[in-house]
Image (cartoon, rainbow, N blue to C red; front, top):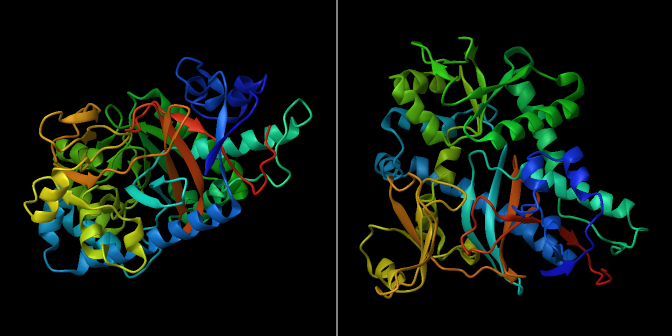
Length: 435
């Protein structure tokens, strides 16, 4: 894993506008979201062997997650664990049933992203799990379109290795999983509503683009779709059904918000118990399913370390992790070292801080919590990220359904990867002939 330079395409902004969602941020020279906004664009090169190892590691991590969830929902003390993760009690039975349902097709997972620190020597450490509705899927698709355009433009002063490829089957796998979901959830009958935070313009743009791509892929299996705003358009009726701005019931929902946001919205309507009852009965289906809330909560990493720190396979990917309020020799030893403090709930680096542990300097780097500091924190051993051209890089590795599906790389000038980061494409090649 190391960087390579490439020549900026003359038409790159138009190519983004024609082929990507979040077109304005991606083409914005000042924001520097897509790497070609930099004066000297670069990507990250992986060898074939590294690609293979990343795919194998991703499959192993998914096996670990499933083994962890079996333990989480079956071992004594379940209610204590759910309380520790700050999950509203009204949903405790529904979340267990969502994992334990006899029919595996009842609560299907769409996709999950593992965020990894990968050293140049190939050591991989799991930083966190994005299991609910992880973003960056469309960026993963766009980097493939970048590669295809670079191949077409090879005669214009650009060259790539003849064997240049990407670790990227994301969209093929998503389309296949959506075909399964469409059948099992009867989307042709019920349609699909996409729940967005209407205060974030990129959510609406992303959702619209995803719907367009999905319907193109499904062909004759297309289904009705609509966008619904969490704050002004979503409601819940007295029977626990979601309703849209026209008071129509919503039976199938793809949420681009956290489960906790949805649960708190239900509480605001005094409908949390009624909604939980609908989820229990299966009348309402939501992507991602309720059991994914456990994986996305960073407290899950604490129990994974507790369970698997000596596991012959899983242990190599795990970092020592504890709840911030845990009192033990091991947690105290971590507190006095360089470590990372993370909120249980939150994404895009909110509320995360890197702390020295010496009691003097405090946080070396931090990001605003923006309200994601109410549920509690974990502490995790600090793992330095690889740095290229001033950017610290996280490797995001996708699981779609149960299949490893590709990589997305994010870089940030802050060691805590945030919302406005850099997206850099990657290549897989055993050749060094990149100019």
